[in-house]
Image 1 (cartoon, protein in one colour):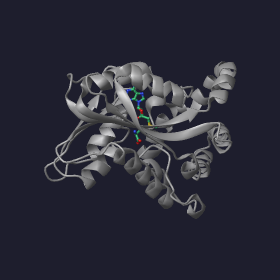
Image 2 (cartoon, helix red, strand yellow):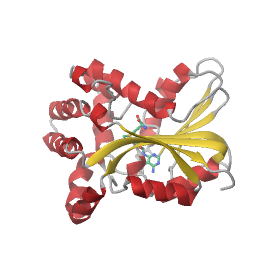
Image 3 (cartoon, protein in one colour):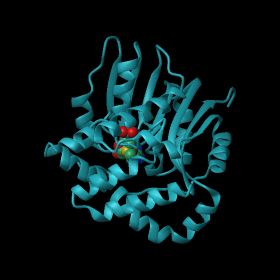
Image 4 (cartoon, protein in one colour):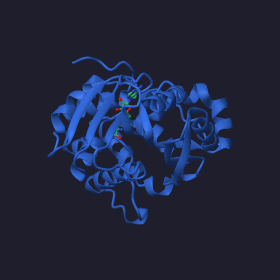
Length: 282
Ligand SMILES: C[S@@+](CC[C@H](N)C(=O)[O-])C[C@H]1O[C@@H](n2cnc3c(N)ncnc32)[C@H](O)[C@@H]1O
């Protein structure tokens, strides 16, 4: 199996556990590899089943703000194991779905797990979201579910998305977005922070504020059409991820996850769903 072109220690651990047939990991992360969404977080019950249902809800919330319709051609950038593509395939007809991922190991699993229903078409392609291997104006929708912080550059990603979207195109993402004050603190802690987080989650850039997104949208030909703060709705994710890391014998990773939980509970780091529409004449 070809190695990934970037270091993603959490995917190394997941693929190893999935290869061993670990049932809890399969249930929690065999389809989606992102946080969950609970309408009422007080009702989360800490079970893996409950988490899997919440992860499914999160991807549905992200693609709902992209207003997908029959006939759309959709790119899911950073598609993981194809969970979002699978969900779209189950809920829509006559759509063309392309999953893009830099890690060929994940694509092997996605191709095994996801088969097109009815008139839908599905393809999984290896590539970098900042160098999208498709022609200009060839998609209606681009999604990036909990992955933009790994990409080499948000600016290059937005430029690429603008290039491949048609004039009525939409982009929907979810991301960990800091308050400006946390961005400043983060600058001081950058060296320590990136080594600490990187040992578990690989390269992560969580210094891009909402104001940065607004500026980027304007500069790359998009209007920001929706912003939803779902931080509180995602919080029940953390105890589950910590518990799974502890079970794998990865206490360091559980501690890193606890630190992200703390700054999220303090609302210094928010979990946002954002959507963008191509600006006419841009
Ligand atoms: C947290 S996972 C999310 C996966 C998937 N979107 C989901 O929600 O299940 C982050 C994903 O981003 C992918 N990724 C990281 N850097 C990338 C890049 N430069 N281009 C394409 N995919 C990338 C990783 O391989 C991984 O699949």
